[in-house]
Figure (cartoon, rainbow, N blue to C red):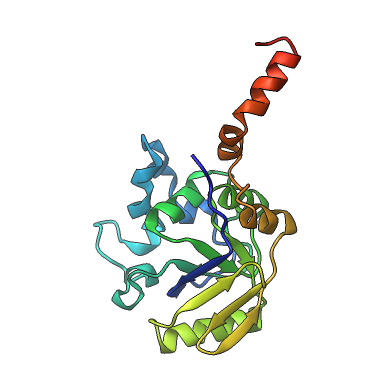
Length: 198
């Protein structure tokens, strides 16, 4: 069990417009009864993607031109509301690997980082330009360069910011506490013996 360093993510992008998109919109509460997180992917944004009869509402995530997009772009205060870890799990299980927004709710940001999902911050004007590029060419490749703190798309370079601790954790493959624990079991055993627990 070893984590991978995350320094770049290359993929198509999809823009989901809206400020204050909370965790209940990301994954409605009734889906929290799942046995495993793997079941959450299809329920991502369910109540704004489908009507009461399960018919598509033509949400950007379901648009054919955005099929295969792995980078989600949104607006301010993304992931606010309750602290349910199911929200980033649903994002990951849907197949999204990174989120670009104006700002993020603190707990959501931390839960994403633990899963290896970079949450990168881009200013409004640049983010709108990026959304326009994607609308003009949904197949345009985005490159999120975590090391250089840049996003590249269609020969445009955008500046991003990240929390230093999250960036360092992703670059050094130390973002998953359980993985870090498993990789250092020998030190855990040594400490247990020294403290008399072994």
